[in-house]
Amino acid sequence: MPKTLYNLLNPTKTRLSDLLKGTEGMSEDDGEELITPEVNEANRTMVAEEWNLGPEKASVDPKANGPYWRKMAKLWMVEEAQARRRFCSNCEYYDNTPERLAECEAVPLDKYDMDGGGRGFCVKFDFVCHSLRVCQAWECKPFENPDMEGED
Ligand code: SF4
Image 1 (tube, helix red, strand yellow):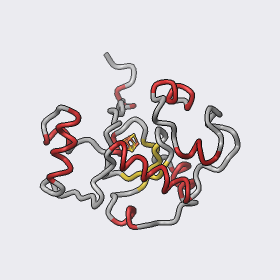
Image 2 (cartoon, protein in one colour):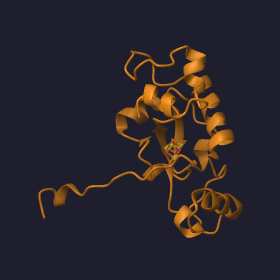
Image 3 (tube, helix red, strand yellow):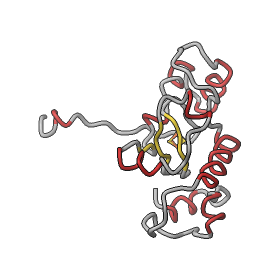
Image 4 (cartoon, rainbow, N blue to C red):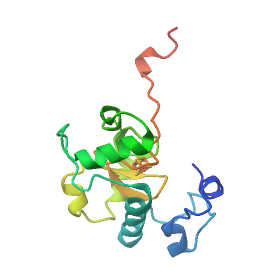
């Protein structure tokens, strides 16, 4: 979502990256680096505090982090089993293209990388997120099988 539209829809959720860089309202292609470690940490903290980013220690174990997933299920008004299928990795804001991953290398690995299941970049909140985590703003990523294109 373009920053301007994001800010229109979320007037109280201005991204810290915009405030810190003084670039609120600018387009995504203003020639700046993707992210700095400082802005990444500030944005991640904001998403954890305001959008329930988690679980902090992610896991592929379907029984792990019960309190977190039950909380998310309640917030999304879905069954816990359904909530547990929602990850950054299948969110429409998750960009894990090789080009993005290369840009993310500007942010050194930290403890969130160790059990996150692999990196991606959240284009909604501008930070390095991880395959096995999620936040309340999750939106389902559409999937199309290229082998099925044109078939009806
Ligand atoms: S918006 Fe999507 S990609 Fe970004 S942190 Fe939330 S779930 Fe992950």
